[in-house]
Length: 347
Image (cartoon, rainbow, N blue to C red; front, top):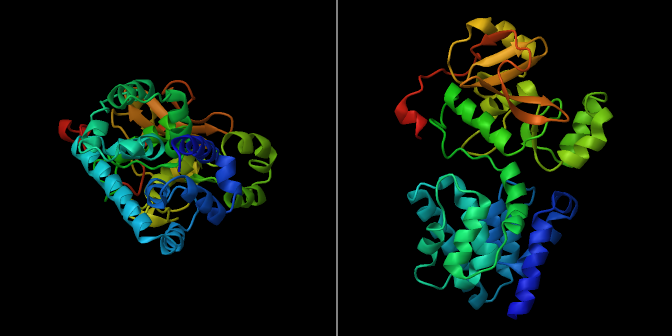
């Protein structure tokens, strides 16, 4: 494949992979065939497995069976590079940015992968608290490329919106207040939407249709806005933001309704079931408490701030505690409360 054709195909890939409507409407197998023409399938499987509804195992097997020995060897080299990137990013303290590095490799830097220092050079482009603009500037300087933060953001936007990052969780094996705070902050920073009756899963056509049937006023009456703004991303309602954390299986990446002892209840019942609670003026400085007023609940993240799945128009937002009319606080039943220490703050 000529460099010109490859460049053109990569632009098509960016367009396809950054458009959630395309991802949701094109049959998975057709998309897979299109993608394999553009770039190695294992790279796509590694980046997107679990984020879009494609039977990646079957797709990979189908494709590999039809590759020549030379093509399979190249494919293996790509897979090895993907794992090397993941290992070195984690070793450098950038576990939460592994997908960013892999996307840069697949979509822009595959021609440089033959260099002996490629992975270390790529990892060296990352720094803490870095913007996309700063990252792309570092990549262009290191590799002589002419990438733009805008194009990178288009690809990463949808990946970030649907990815669940537990790399900084204090204890992924338990359900606790500190990781609930991180869950809530990630949801807010990644632009989760609000759809009544949802709990953090990706809003696909099937889930939306189900919610319209069950909640014709709350969801059906706002279908146009939801389709335009939230379809293809993760969504939750106010109590769903809490239930979704408790129900999320960090090992499988699946949401299991009713898991970890958290029942499928509403905000008011959650408040009623709480053993420890009080009026909002007595709230202790404990991140991961819930704040409540009749019919609505949010997550207190500390320092006078709350993350809440506010409403259909606003989605998941961060607000000052005094802004929403909270009347009470509560310790959420069904999760553990552990002390915030300097050690687990830096996890």
